[in-house]
Structures are given as C-alpha cells and as structure tokens.
View 1 (cartoon, rainbow, N blue to C red):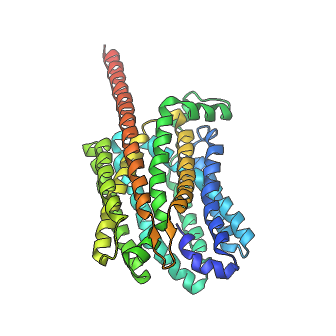
View 2: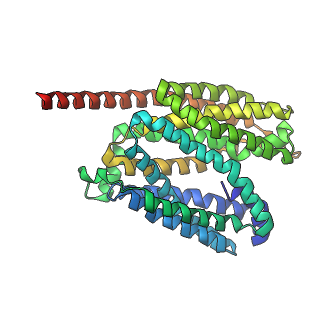
View 3: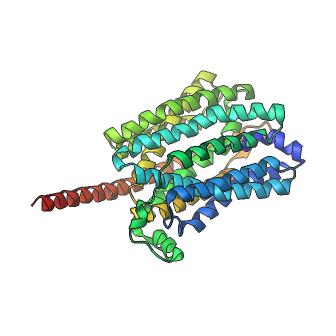
Length: 392
C-alpha cells in the first residue's frame, strides 16, 4: 500500500527502471506468502503474543532497512525481509482475534479491522506523499518505524498472554502439523474460498487507476478525491457491516455483498466518460459490496479451524492471500491491453472474471456456513449436556 504510490519518487531517486520497481513492490508479497507457509508448522506452539512481538520486531527492522536503503539491491532485500516478517504478523493477529472473541462477536471485530485498513488508505497515503515530497521518498518508512514502536509498546504493556491453545494436544512435529492443516478436508474449502475471494479483487485493483483516467475520463488531480471519499465510506461502513453480520447472520451479509459486488462490477468495468459524481457513487457502492464480503467471510471462516490449529490455518490462509493476489495481478496484465492513447481494452473481461469468482465463492461459502454452524450447534449441545450432568 505504501510503496506503490511512491513510484514516481523512488524510480528517479534510485535510478531504477519501472520493471525493477515492480520487482521491489512484488517482493514483499511473495516473501510474505512464503514465510506464512514456513511458519505455519510452528504457529501454534508458542504464546501468540510472543509470536506476534517477535515477528512485529522483524517487521519494524525490515521497514528501517527500507528507509536506509540507497540502492536497488538493498531496497529489494529490505522489502523481502519486511514481507517475510509481515506475513506472519497478519496471521498471528487474526489468530489472536479468533482466540479472544466468540464467533457471535467476530463480525464487528472484523469490521473494525477492515475499517483500519480503509483509514490507513485515507490518512496514511496522503500523509506519506506529503512527507516524501518534502523530506524524500524514505521519510514515510521512518514514520512507520516510529508508529510501530508506539504500537509495540502498547502490545507489550496492554495485551495479556494468549496461550490457552497450548493446553490442548499439539503435534510435536512442526512439519506434521503443517501437513495436517494443509490436508484437513474441512480446512481445504476455506483455503480455496480465500484464494478465489483474493484473486477476483486483485485482478481489478492494479489497473483501476489507468482505467479511471484513460477510459472514464477523470483527471489525475481528481483521483485523490475519488479515493478519499470511497475510503471514508469504507471506514464508516466497516463497523456497521460487521454488526450486521453478527445480527442478521454472516452468510446472509456475504450473500448481500456478492449480489452488490456483481451488479456494481458489471457497471464499473463498463463506465466511459462519466461525471465525477457518478464514478464516486459507483466506486463507493462497489466498496460496500466488497467490504460486505470481506468482513462476513473473515468472521465466518474464522470458525473453521480448531483452537489448536488456528495459528497454522491463519498462516496458510495469509500466504494464499498474498500469492493469489500476486498471481491475479499477473493474469490481469495478460488480459488487458493498453492502446496508444492510454485506453485499456478488455477491462470488462476482468470484471466478468470477478463475477465468476464471486459466484464460485458464494457456493463454497454456503458449505463453509453449514460446517461452521453445525460445529457451533454441536458444541452448544455438548456444553448443555455437560451442564445438566453436573447439576444431576
């Protein structure tokens, strides 16, 4: 999210080509994907707070290396180090959320988490561009190190140990634990659904700016207005959609999000020379559909893994998100074609592919919902039986 908008400053500062800059951007995602898989076997063997702090410290160190990098090679290596630690940070955070909050509350928790992502886009990117224009492209990385230091102190001081899963029976062999998580039939459907949800969105994202400028006819200067308003809508709607998923049912909100996404994607990818307010309206409604799917699916699929497998499951899921996103961006580049005047051809084809992945994910999520709700009902029934037997 941070480095991509700084391309206009980083490329001339380090005297690199656009192709090299693309490698620097993608190195983070692929390193995060690989590290998530490698860490999955160990993810459930430690206190989740300690695991988070170890990899959070590595993320801070990698970010500092990015700030200090003054050549292409050093920046590429620093991005790989940062991604390697960041991939596990995300998985550990989601495992902590799943451990601390019951399924009935996870919708609103996921809503706040997604709102944080939206807020980082609204506030973080403009601030980063401002700092870069005044103090150089590496200034935002120094800022992240400072913010991470404050947040890290809060984690150390305020977050209690998250180690209840250690009392459960664990696989002693990390490789066996990894293979067990990868091959558990009930988890596979969650992994496939995660990959489909990620691939559809990442096919559109890298090319949306070009499409909006050259096909829709919105000036580059007004792009910030579009992203600002859509980001604010996402930040406000996140908690509301999270509460709705807890109140009305996570699968129902997911179904609503799928329907909204399909309709708005078919409209969005076929826009041409429309007023600014039309683009903002369509983009905002599309964000509502996408966030409805992300929040409800994250909350629902968090109910799939057993407590003893949550760290491994979240690590693998995080890796799939990173790798699926990178693969989708590459496939999208093979579909769209840019003409001499800058217009994108076949962008609507990417929209049609997103519609297909959305429909497929809806079918898979139906089975995920049946599985999670069935497990929750069985657990409630068992708890009731235990209570009755104790009273007798």
